[in-house]
Image (cartoon, rainbow, N blue to C red; front, side, top):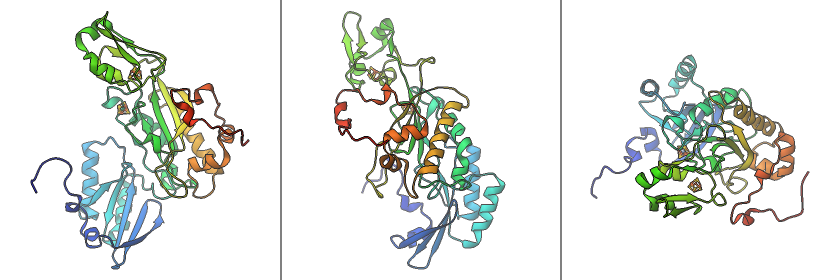
Length: 353
Ligand code: SF4
Ligand code: SF4
């Protein structure tokens, strides 16, 4: 087979020898303490993984530090989980306690395993993406400053809790399938600089960039026009044509969605649904958003049954009760009025209050 430089290298070149030797033989795992997983193989081998939170956008100093720790305790083996947790893979039992000691001394957060908040996954935010309505890393920092006790296990939650932040509705993160998702939103029709559009924008690709067909050519101005009826304020067109401005610091903000999950356990995977349509974009600490997420976690933690994810808890108590117990106002914004939305409407007359 021809060798190419496309794609990542074969993962089997990088896994620890203990995993390669016991491939397909791992039988079960235990969680002896928050953040620590012990994996048992039918061969008798034991692998301990120690999970710590990462700030997601990491500095070279941080990368060097976790590499040094991995060299010292894990034979150089470390992995990132899908939610950007760092997992140190320890095959020598005698090194687990010293590793935990060094992590504690360096103030790493150990946790995020089992019934706990996992690392908050987020998108690129102001640091990189030109479409960002809000920041992602700053929001996550503000939220996790409120919730880190649920990561380390100091405070308990009834089930796994996945939180995600996306800085616009394109949602590069896992927002649609997270228990709680914060999504940056525009709320105004994009403005168009027609003179600039006629000079710098590729009109066909600008029209094609709109997922809802809201843009059509304006031959008179050699530009485009946008239908307010069809636009969902996603900001895609602004990324394609610099003459279209979707940003508005006065009206942009964030929304909060709840109840998504990927897991097939107990119930089928679920898409998250709108809980809070708008909160102000309030950097650098986003107090309204952090408080709203904390309230959702606290109400769910106090009321859900063991093992019940947020979406499953809402399905049991009903959305009417969810709005009551969380104190969130139900507004016209919660009613899906988009084209083809009728397929999502609840058509029963039964309400659970
Ligand atoms: Fe860019 Fe939107 Fe993705 Fe954020 S969610 S990184 S703004 S495309
Ligand atoms: Fe289309 Fe999104 Fe631009 Fe609105 S903001 S016109 S929906 S691409």
